[in-house]
Image (cartoon, rainbow, N blue to C red; front, side, top):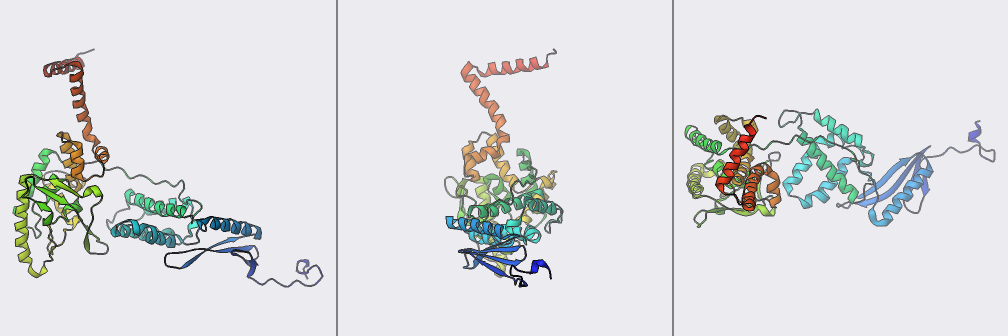
Length: 437
């Protein structure tokens, strides 16, 4: 008989029967096997009333006692139990329902949920939140770069991976804020920033060419959808696509002394789930009145007649939504169909369609307005920006020419220059620049 199996009285020691429960005032320590001590304590009750617990395995009773004491102290301070025992998937699903859904629009919550289901849960969703390391997250991004997007049939873009990074960090930040995590699993995790897209705009000549080509296209290709003056509205108003696609005839004030459009809703389509709905605009500043030219007002009057005739032709297939730009059913036009049509016209005027998108109209309006000395505050209000600083930040590429004009004007005031003197100075400067050294 082995000496280890004999107790102090010389009798054979009874073999231990597991599990062995070590009583503690709060929580439990359960010995599952030699050198296997489980800490168990109630963590919290979630929004559905289900109880959650904290568990962690240690190799010695001393380590388990120290961990239990730490967790009890944390809970007694009113911060709950740190290091939740949930899987990352369960933790994120709780974040989406308890913290994210109440403060964002439903379709935004849906987009973020689908991103997690597609690009996070299949790869690290099974891991315990507290066991995730920065290396796990960095490896996730490396894996995603090798994945093919089912929508584009191309490798995932850096912009998609950047969005995953932002969403994941947002969820884990919530865990730190609520006291369920004692450390941030994404600490020191980096992600490549997607290359910033260069803002492409139309010149004045290109805008006129586009509208001319659009008139020819409509004459040559009878369209099944009454697009009408949709591109004129997009350019002159600078509205976002979802704003003019949700525009209703009740928003048009065409007979006022100053014709204007009232922007107060957007049309949202959820292609993944199907269906569409009206929603509030992006920000409070997005609810606005946009003055329009009398030429555009006349085009919109003709558009009303076109839609009325189209409605009679569609008969029972029509669903009345009072839309200025409806599709065949009376619903908002699919944005991707409008984009395809827009790029076809862009190709027709000799430009590369890959560089242009529907937002090009919005940027073109703002750029040309600022370049033509329209007050930046007026442009900002037209765009529906929450603050003028957003407009200045977005369209800084237009400002250098304005600075040159400001310098000339201020110099004329300070040094009593007249127009003729400034011309002579400019010619002299040009001559100095061309004179050989």
